[in-house]
Length: 263
Image (cartoon, rainbow, N blue to C red; front, side, top):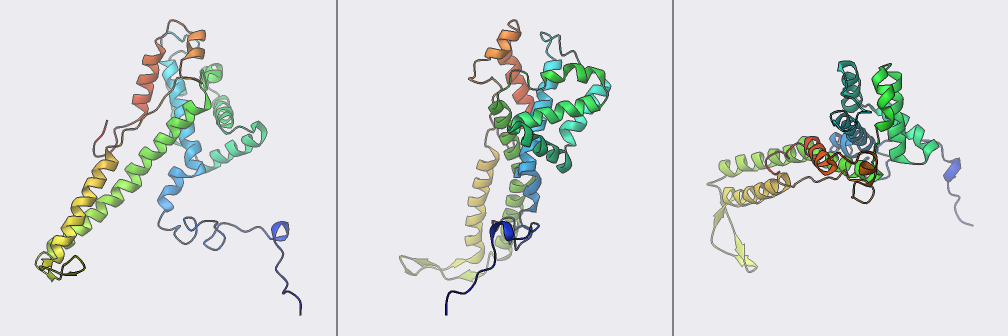
């Protein structure tokens, strides 16, 4: 006979929700339970959320900069709205960004538009007046590099370092418990002088601690200097402002020190 018939593919395939059976990669499928804590941090939603955080904090920084009179110091109502946007951005809000992106065909510009719409919808007049400064003097990489750094920082703080600490603590406990249990050792492919299970586990505890310290000491860096890093748009609009100092202060305030050390 001829070839066996195959099931219809492509457009004929019915839509399926995400599950262990329909996931494209094992991270979202077979191992989804193990990495579910990363979904709010390093997913598309996580990226959008941290972009929003960078944009809002930049607008707040402008409001604190004396040489930018068009963005006066925000009052309590405006500050409360901006804090809700910056720290309470939900998956549903991120979907609004994706919907807007279908129109703008630009991911960061879509973020800007959704933030501005939220400011208008809040009914706070000073936000409606200042909303056009949401993305003032920014290029997309200003927002993206900060968002990626914030993703890394949050992932280290909430997932990676706690997992490493738990692993090290568990191995340390086993090393002490099994400190006197003899174990056959080997060298040059043959048996050698005896060791203990605890001692060998202690070696891995030491190695993992060093790696944990190295990961925690990673210095987060970021820039907010415009398209080519020269503050061109900043200086064109407000030549009397010390923009390198403003940007440095902004980035330093945005990043908390990495857990366990680092600058």
